[in-house]
Image (cartoon, rainbow over all chains, first blue to last red; front, side, top):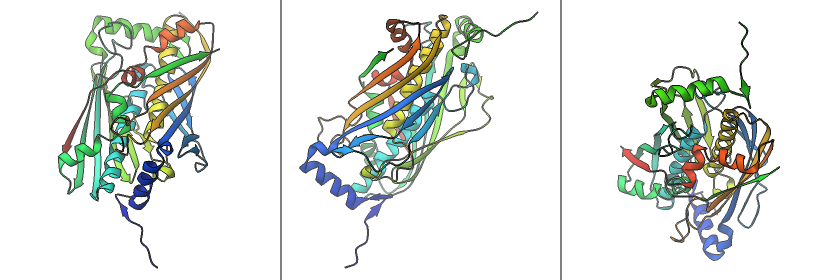
Length: 183
Length: 183
């Protein structure tokens, strides 16, 4: 018997359907925990290591190498500009997550996407970070994302698919962050 | 006249004080806009380019090279695991931003930090992303950050300094995200 894989938008739809069915039968498989370790190097420069995670009922054993990511600040923000700054990294996470949410959910619905790119912008008023005005927020005030998508899908369809993005949820809605200190 | 630079925690404190004074005199200098361009490659794999930004009253001209960042998904999430996934990238942005907020604000207060590292964890239930249960959120349900800091500062002091982190604000409080589509 010859079988061909059912791939849409680079996503293996058979595997996606099998994953959804497995989670419907055993909801505990959907529990994931992602982890990171951030080391301060100097000033505003950090390196983060990402490798281990929990999911599908077990500690992951497929990821063989750790990923190292860097963050720094541009010279006008007193850094050495060795890497993108944390706000820019959030834009990267958001753009990537919205994009993946659309390709995965489009694939599940049989919607083909030929090409997709997005530009993201976020404005900040540093009076918040510097503690000069308690009425000014510390983070980006808002983020605008402009998508250019080559697809037969309508804008309404794409907009609905984008809403499945976990990072879009985490940024547009509150995500509780607890901070502990060990000496 | 011999002058020595006043550096604490790798942060140039004289420049930091000068920046604060400049912003107090001309608040519009504090307006920044950060930008990113995310290109979809295939499946859940994206590349983001970061370079231009606006700040201190002008388009930046100091950053000579663009930064390229990648995002993918592990094989159990139907990716090729070429890079960390967007949720892990958010942990990286958060860990780096909390760390920089502490080093900068500690420097401004004359508090020395000798070493600092943090581990971050965030749990997710994929029933949200998969659209299987509308009561389950799509993003990480909560994030825990454990800091290990070598400093004379008290836990209370460090905790206050961490609260200046822009990414901590963006994640723990809602940040409006507008999405537009151009065909």
